[in-house]
Length: 139
Image (cartoon, rainbow, N blue to C red; front, side, top):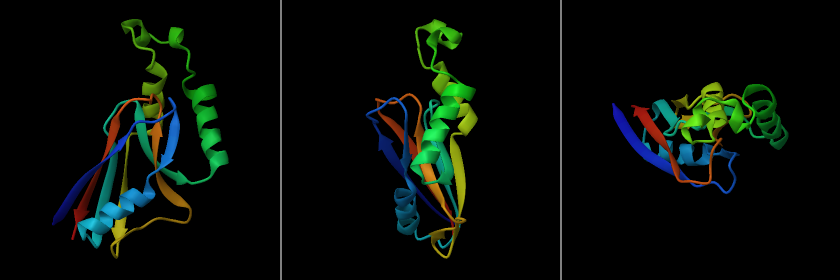
């Protein structure tokens, strides 16, 4: 079995951002030479996410609003975690809700998606250096 590992680094300009990383993931699949297998894409920080969804800006705004209004409002006084001197408890909860990794099948050397699917990095507590691992496995 072949394996290939690479990392993406992020230092977002905003505290929260959604970034399409599909092309970077596909480039690593091509570089790996794997024709049949899987690629794991995982955020290596507990206040970030990796997810599969549609590349549509209205949906991104809906996701951000849903996280703020329904999942974890950014209200530092609301959370016990923030009593430690942090202010990012909401980012931890957002990451827990969205998830920190995805596995995408590889068929004939390409990401095997359904219509409209793309891979995204979700940053919930940015403006500092973070990374994502891309691990390709297969034949």
